[in-house]
Amino acid sequence: MENRLAALERRIDRLEEQQAKTPASGRQIAASSSLELVRHFRERAMEGHAPGETAGTVAYTGAAFLGGHEYVWAGEHPVAELMATDWTAAAGTLESMGSPPRLALLAALVGGPRSRAELQEALGGESSTGHLYHHLRELQRAGLITQRRRGAYEVVARAVIPLLAILAAALDVSPGTLTDEPGQEPA
Image (cartoon, rainbow, N blue to C red; front, top):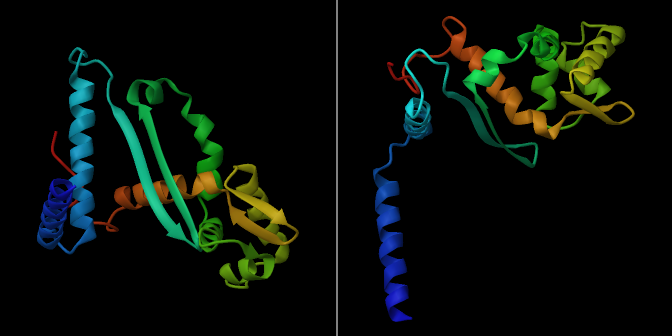
């Protein structure tokens, strides 16, 4: 028992030392672990694939605490399957997200359920009730939000991390929004 306790104490000491040496920036930590994952996917893609052959993996993961709820998600898709898929199947979801009012609604809803009045306010109050319901119907049709009770809407739990991943990816490819530093590694 004493040996086990001593081993645990040594392990805790090492972990505390490691934590003390870790950079304060969570972005640097995330970039480091993300690059490790990318290297893993790259090695896996290179195994058993001929040069010029479509191979690889696109993945996204996340853990978020929003509005008192925890959301955890991981998605992984082989590149060959993505390339063989009809991309127009994603058009409805992307179109539903592709307007500033709908993004404003999603931003309000990702923090937790909101009433119709709160959502009207999220649109700046300048939009009519008809416009609000039009946008809400489109987001519901895309499977991104749901109406739990009359006049109260929320983001579907399984959509939270994918929505944030889509937002992050859009920011990554948008000119002048994020830096090129973390997470990138030359081929």
